[in-house]
Every structure is written in C-alpha cells, then in structure tokens.
Length: 165
Image 1 (tube, rainbow, N blue to C red):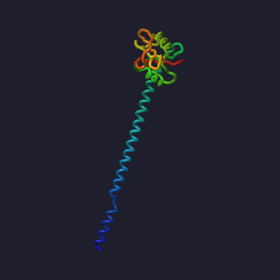
Image 2: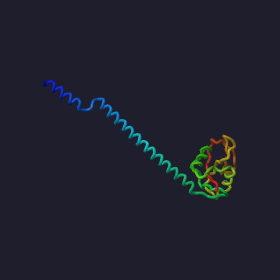
Image 3: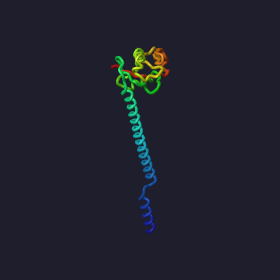
Image 4: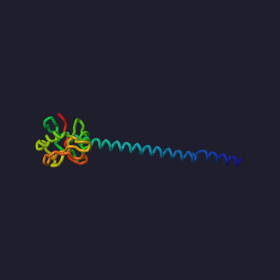
C-alpha cells in the first residue's frame, strides 16, 4: 500500500508541470512572436525613413520651384538642379518636379542663353535640351560660348528646368 501511495505521489508530481514537448512548443511560439515583433519594428523604421526621404525631396523641390522668372512664354527656374546629369537622368529629374517642369527644347535653351544675365545662376558649361537627334544623341548648349551641338546622352551636363506659362 505504501508503494502505491509513493507511485501515486510521483505520478501526481510528474503530471503537474509541462512536459518537454510543451516547453519546446512554448519556446518556439515565444521565438515566433519575438521575430514578428522585430519585423514590425523594422517595417515601422523603414516607413519612418521613407517619410523622411519624401519630406527632404519635397523641400528640395520646393526650393527650386520657389525661385522662378518668366522669359517669353516660359517659366524658368533661377537655379540649376543639384548636379550634372546624363540626359535620361535629367529628363527624370525634371519630371519629378511635377506640374509640367521639363527640359527646355533646343530653341528654348537658346532663349535661356540669350537671357542668361537676366535669369542668372548659370554655370559657364553645357546644359541639356530635350531635343533628341536619335536614340543615343541629344542637343546641348554651352553657356560659356553659346554654341549648340549634339552629344551622347551618357555625357553629363547641367540642367535648368522650364515649364510653359
């Protein structure tokens, strides 16, 4: 009888706590929850960074757009975009400005050259036009001497955005 009592007590204590499989399952669930929380934190951080970048880009664009001058039928930015660009990147940079901003045609670019003192801020270097000669060649103009020419679109030139009034 005493032995049965001992066996009963041992069985009772043995069945009171979780077994090894239950402990492993609880640990697996804890790890999954932890990983999910870390993913959510990472997603929130990515969203925060994206929003910061969007606001910085918006401020950059507003800085350019806030200073313009009218020349003929064109509204012209009084500052170049930040750096030199390939032709494709110049087209994209102007498009990102929105509201009809674009590269000037070769004739419009010449009008800018003729009014460069009135507009101000031009480098004594080459500027892109939107006029293409073929798939690989586009027109540009030197604001040092005024000459226009064809150049490979992979070259890098300055950009002055315009839009029609």
